[in-house]
Amino acid sequence: MLICLAGCFAAVSAQEVLVDYDGNVYPTVRIADQIWMGSNLNSTHDARGRMINRVCYKRISENCEKFGGLYAWDDLGVDGDSTQGICPDGWHVSTDEDWRKLAENIGGADSASYILCRDSLLGFNLQYGGNFHNRLRNFNYLGKIAYYWMADEFSTTAAWIRMLSPKNLNMNRSTVPKVYCLSVRCVKN
Picture 1 (cartoon, helix red, strand yellow):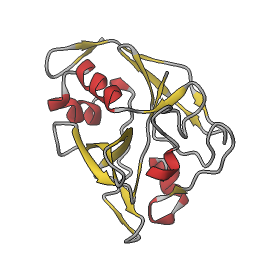
Picture 2: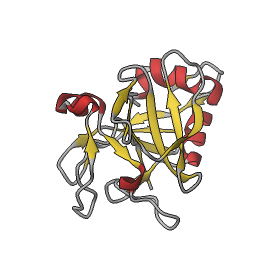
Picture 3: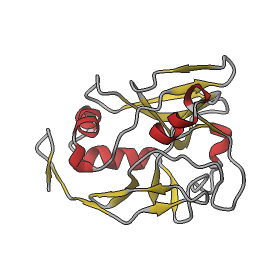
């Protein structure tokens, strides 16, 4: 059992590992009734073998190994009918509802970033992969902020994200232009 800051109790247990199309191995973690990838997606192919444009921070491959890849919205492969996108079979790109439930299960959004950043017992292994702006061609915030795409579109030019930082208590929900490349976490169906 994990005791959260807000006094909640969330059952946490390690799961089997997940292997993607490329052979990358990801730990998984069960938090209450959800099973999450325990590290950021780092694949260059979707489950059907279609090539995905993965960006490594500053174009250094070791950054992908440490922090996972950064992906453009158009490469997520999500649409109104399916959220599997670039995730392995049986998994999907995390949604706003997935993040809401995760926050609720560990004490609420007001302290979720703090808990995910500091509680190694969770096994979530928060990785601060930063971001990449496709048009401006610049990288920002490696090791400082974790930006995660959600499978939820906001408009034709923006989508919903979750942003976590060791300097913030709360798990921020916001929108960003689709020209960014951000990290991805998959959740088991």
